Length: 405
Image 1: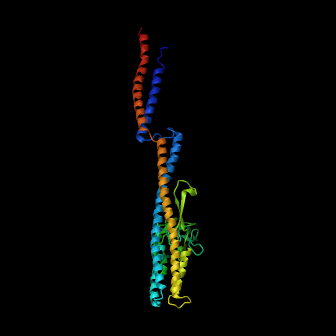
Image 2 (image 1 turned 135 degrees about the vertical axis):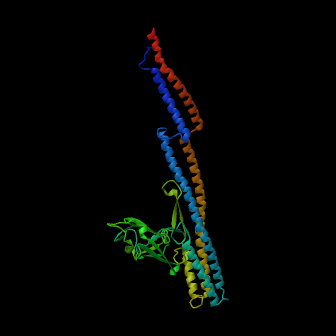
Image 3 (image 1 turned 45 degrees about the vertical axis):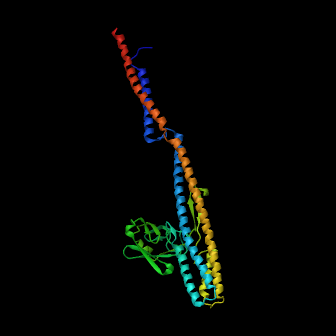
């Protein structure tokens, strides 16, 4: 082998090996400090893609568990209210049985009708106030919608100073007319009647605080209405006068909800839950509609002035109460089945998420036993490489002995 000094091949070889051991040491330190085997795409491109997809799936599944638990709470809210309604229906049947007895006169049956009226009102009130997160469950609508046939204010409505881009009434009650008015002081008020029209509520929003001149949302929190506006060829500073006297009529929307209980978009990842409308005045349920007819007939003829005897009217009320009880019992049974199904759904989602997390861990997480061994090996190689590089750098000095001779 020739003796040369311009190119120290041994030094170059030592440097290359030292660089490799340093890179290995850096990789081990990164994995041990982060706990991850894959810290960048260069560590394992395919593994990175798989683990990222699994991570997204796991997060969606964990959210689905929360969704299902929220659904359980919603169903329990509705089912608890229906339990109280059934107690009142049983009382109605008891009162019907009492009224069917001809030992009672018109006055006594009138007292019974008074209690029936109160029970009827309370059932309707439970229907109107039972909600979960602002979604009414037992009035035939889990999401209230706008009756565009009669409303004068709705999405797409153009006003002088702008355009209504969206009207959200999901938090409002169905079957209510909301009337807007310019309060003359830079605000817009909305008023509506509740409890059969006996109570009027008013809420005012100062537009200057929510509209920036070109866009904004009027949030009537108590009414459950949000109106979004945007400029249309100008600003919206005068929108109070534009919306003055306009009305929103709400109506029952869907009586069912969909729970997202999977990481996909197909129907297999959703569970539909339906609620019965228990409002005696407008329910389309056959049993509850029959109860309305029986209550109306009894109220009109309990004093014996009608063509049907008070006893027969009371017995018809007993039958109608039973039919209404059966309708609600049927829906409660369905809700109970959904609750059991959701319990199994939650357990399955948690198991799937757990197994996916284990799979993702095997791909992405660092094996500390292996990495500490690699770290020790890289540290020893780095020390040895540094020493050998020093030796290789001193080899050209051997040529000096030739020059001295």
